[in-house]
Amino acid sequence: MAKRTRRDILKTTAALAAAGLGGIVGRAPAGQSPPAGRAQARSLRRGRRKAFDVVIVGAGVFGIWTAWHLLSRGLKVAIIDAHGPANARASSGGETRVLRIAYGAAHHYAEWAHEGLAGWRALAARHEGPLFFPAGVLWLTHERDSYVEASLRSLDTLGVSHRILDRKALARRYPQIALDGIRLGFLEEGSGAILARRAVQAVAREVEAMGGAIIRARARPFEARGSTIVVPLAEGDRLEAGAAVYACGPWLPKLFPEVIGNTILVTRQEVYFIGPPAGSPDYGPGRLPVWADFNNGDIFYGIPDVTGRGMKLAHHAFGEAVDPETMDRRVTTALVDEARAFLARRFPALADQPLLGGRVCQYSVRAGENFLIDHHPDEARVLLVGGGSGHGFKHGPRLGRFVADLLTGRESGIPPYFRLAQG
Image (cartoon, rainbow, N blue to C red; front, side, top):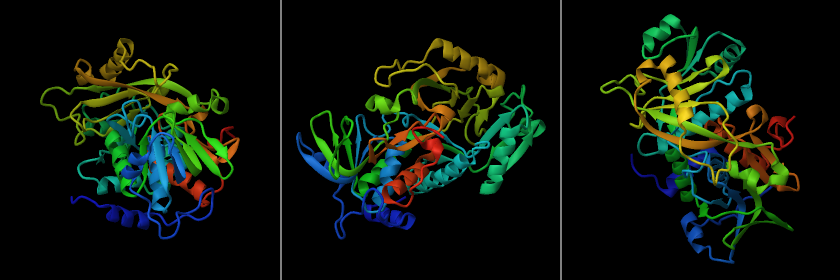
């Protein structure tokens, strides 16, 4: 694939998103092109100021897609991140993420996931090299309960290709899966897995190509000065803008403890990469889909070996509360043993296979696992965005559009479940 130029990307984004009007911030001055992001980042010196339409704190999946949508509408945007896009500490870092659509009765999340999948697919089509793996997503369950029924209705409503598989069909298609306690499954045929770190960094490159500034620095809480929002940096600089978005994941409660309080809990999570048996193709994307095992409410999920590191395995259970800056990022023997016990039951051929790697990351969990998207209570021009709750990555393109819509006046209402005080 030929390398895309800034002009190519601007043409694409112009077709995807028309310019925003009104709202919290206005458009960039007519006829004025935003300067190149790298040049902006280089020009920052101690004590100097820069004027932007929007400053975004956090270059994870929420912040970077918000910047992408704002830049596509002609706004001048800076993104600040202490460690850079999709860094090893970030919730948006790591090898892979699941892109799935089923959400039980939470149809609003299914709609967002559906649009999010389209956004990720479009990014992958613009990207050189593999980024998205449409291996399908297989849900395994012990019964056809209300969650399954509501999920199937959502998939039908959204026109998502899927099929229901009984035990006999599951055993025929996926002999590597032991079906103890499983009565049926349903397969989202167009869903799959994405290379998370590479995907976020690909969006970041497009952001810079559209004129966005990505600045590696530590941001402080904002200051409101008349018509200007000032975002101070720990290093002594400050950025000025018409509005700001704080989308800094597990660091959000640290920046605004009085506002966030204990409504976002940062939890420690472990994921593992299990080596397949020598010579076995059964755990790659051609033979194994992304999968999620309801396991009587104790959910495990996994991603086939798309990177050569082995099958990814994770337990969707909230771990201990941690500080993202100081937490121990080594996997623990007790949790590895728990994962191996699950493998012995569901993937017996992997139970004694080597652990090829592990990663310790974090969730930012809110009540009901709902995202936070709301105005700061003391300043309407500042939006607080976070609370991904372990399922936010897939929604990045759609969530970014929603936040951009709030900032540019296309959207004025925030659903109660996204508010600081959830309705």
